[in-house]
Image 1 (cartoon, rainbow, N blue to C red):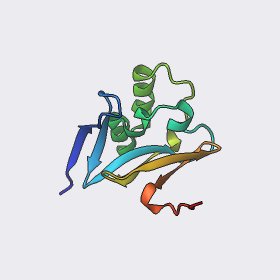
Image 2 (tube, rainbow, N blue to C red):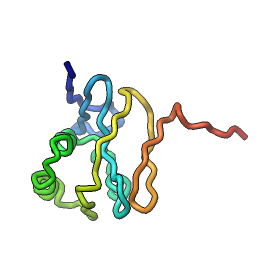
Image 3 (cartoon, rainbow, N blue to C red):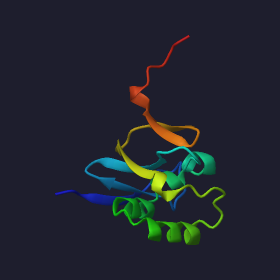
Image 4 (cartoon, rainbow, N blue to C red):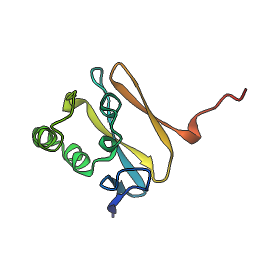
Length: 118
């Protein structure tokens, strides 16, 4: 049976930011299509983890998601096509970055990157 937890993040994040965790994996929201990047274009890390948005996406309830975004985040500069949003799962506690190219966002786990040493 899946276990879902919604927890506040650590001290380096806003005290109101939470994350959606299922079976030891954290839900991360990214844009999977060309256009506007989700968190990268907004420059808002809270948009990566928003549990309500994750829930709408997992239920494929895009109409209500768009309504929710307009009400909760009226200051968003670039509304992406909500059809381009998807949930990726990252192991809890993993460090990662989100890179964007032409609106398509990709998650890179820190321990999966081969760093070059000078």
